[in-house]
Image 1 (cartoon, rainbow, N blue to C red):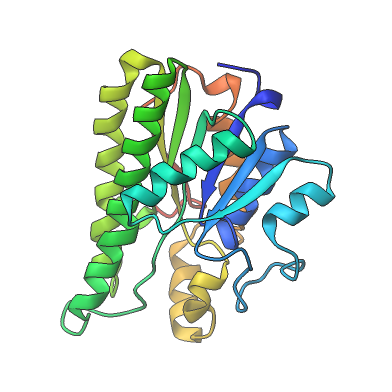
Image 2: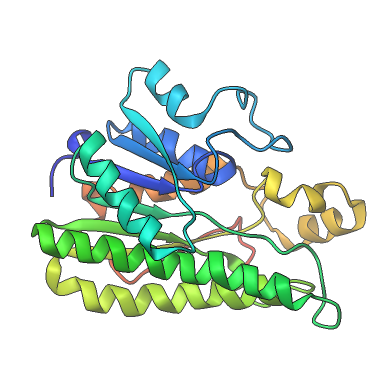
Amino acid sequence: MSSESQRIAIVTGSSSGNGRAIALRLAEAGMSIMCADLRPDARDDGYEEDKDITTHELIVSRGGRAAFHTCDVSQYEQFTELITVTKDALGTPTVLVNNAGYFTGLHSIFDEPESAFDSAVAVNLKGVWNGCKAMATHLRAAGVPGRIINIASVGGLVGIPQEPAYCATKGGVVNLTRAVALDCAPHDIAVNAVCPGFIVTGMVREFMDQPDVLEGMRAATPSTRFGQPKDVAAACAFLASDEAEWITGSVLTVDGGFTAK
């Protein structure tokens, strides 16, 4: 695999939160970044201080190479198009971070809408399957090694009240990662998952705005602080680095000790 400064990485869900931080961190390592999302603009409810500038524009302003392409990860054809566009714009991609995700909101199994479950499956699970399939097929055809990093969640490792669809789909991502890692190992394609705990992003503002829910998350997290997108980004940077060459099929928790209890 080429050195980190020569790699081309695709990051889905790159406009806000964890995806934005991941894209910026990989760019700092010298990688060229294809940012992919439904829109380039950051979420209005996000916590980024510089959310008035898009992720790819921010990377370029810092001297990096980046571009943006719209992609609905639930559509396989859009993923294959994303890889082709990346190759044409930046070069052959060898790193994919399947970060795009959908949070259904807080609902118990008694009142979670079927539509919420369907949307969670389409983005959180099928979207990651699409990315794994498209990227692995591309890398095998190109005859080059690569890295696929799937963003799961602690909700894929333990049950969390009022998140049945989210936990179900993230649990699927965890075991999908293991299965794909076995398929890809003979082709020098490493496949790993990162399981964030409670990370302060716009996607979980619903938690932040409910004192009782926020206190519950605070009590369940042994660390003295909540996680930040930079924590997830650091884990992804490691898994995409030369130091992680022989790591595949692993599930790395970034949760302040949430799942250690």
